[in-house]
Image (cartoon, rainbow, N blue to C red):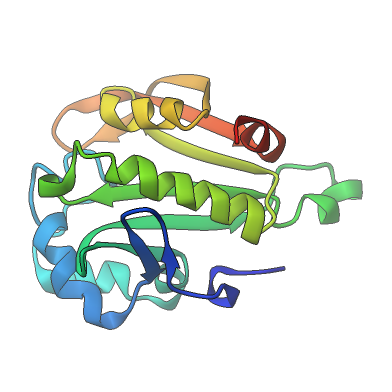
Length: 190
């Protein structure tokens, strides 16, 4: 199995540089993830740089996080976690490492310029071409329209709306959405 660590970093897109997270990135990530407007829809709101470091620097998190740079500045981060697809016991080995889950956060000052679409598009390429997964999923609060619109722009299909399954720290129980795309579907779009 190929992992993110096995890839030839950094990777360049038209406007962005993608590279693995390092311990030196904490200050740059704190600069945008510490903002309430940025972390409104993320999995947690760090209250300090130290709390952010505790969350981002465990080895499993470092191994699954890619930093997004534009013009030498860290403007966001991508999570790419490869896992097993669901399978019956007799064929479980075939489903190992067959699915990836994506997540992303972008600095507010760089939102609305297509950077997230470019970065997540490259994450899909990495998942399918480099890591060899057969399916990629992403989830969001249904109220987080910019995220699911991005998923749709990249060809991901809405597979589920989960009624009040997601507890938001300020808004209470909200609906969540699940989007996915298969490798064959992604390749057909290229």
